[in-house]
Every structure is written in structure tokens, then in C-alpha cells.
Image (cartoon, rainbow, N blue to C red; front, side):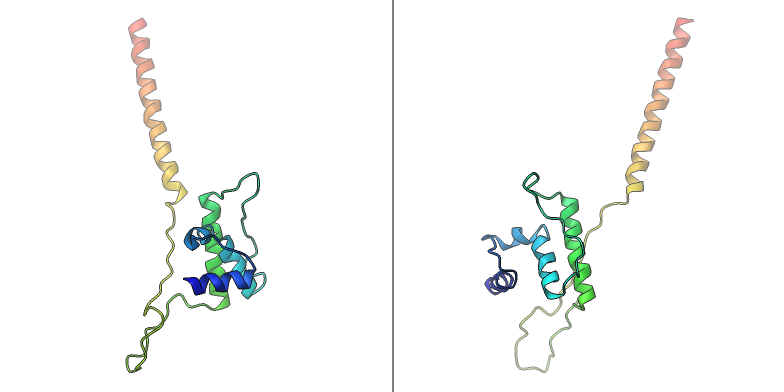
Length: 137
């Protein structure tokens, strides 16, 4: 981890906080690193501002997705092949590295739920009005 920290800090000429994971979580440093390796590989980077010092989860996710897309364009494989079993050296990296992202549910599912709830509420209100109207007459 220290070697990774030193590499990022020397390339980007920044000082990262003690907790490396939290400093990479918003994707800003990752996007800058991708642009350092291949300029303009990440066209848009969402960065915190003095007015809003913490990025929303959506902007963090976009930064990380932009970083992953840049890695694919640069040619970084999504999986690293297993080490040669006949080699006498132990592998320096894990035998399989996989990049996965979790996507949120589609927006139409949320709107279907909201729409069906509103329809049920509207039916209940109409039944109440009809019942109240019949009691008055």
C-alpha cells in the first residue's frame, strides 16, 4: 500500500491523507491519475468545491466509472491471467483481479412503484368521497 501511495503522490505531486482508501473513494485522484498516464482519457472529473466540500454519491460513482472507462481505453485488462504454474517464483499479484460495479435499479421501477401507490391512494379518496356524498343525500 505504501508503494501505491508513493507512486500516486510522486506522479500527481500531491500528499494523500493517511487513509488511502477514503482518499480514492470519490474517484477524483483516480481520474487525475488516468489523465496523467494518458492525457484527456477522462474528459470530465467532478471535484469538490469550497461551497460543497463533499461530492454526492452519484458524482463519486461517475468519477469511478469514468476512471474504469479510461482504464479500458488505455488497455488495462479487467482480469489478470493466473501465474504460470510451472514457474518457481510465487506470483506477485493475486491470480485473478476482477472489476465490478453495482448499478442502481432502473428509474422506471421506482416510478412504477410511485405511480401504483398514487393510483391506490386516488381510488381510496374517490371511494371516500363517493361514500361521504351518498351519506349526505
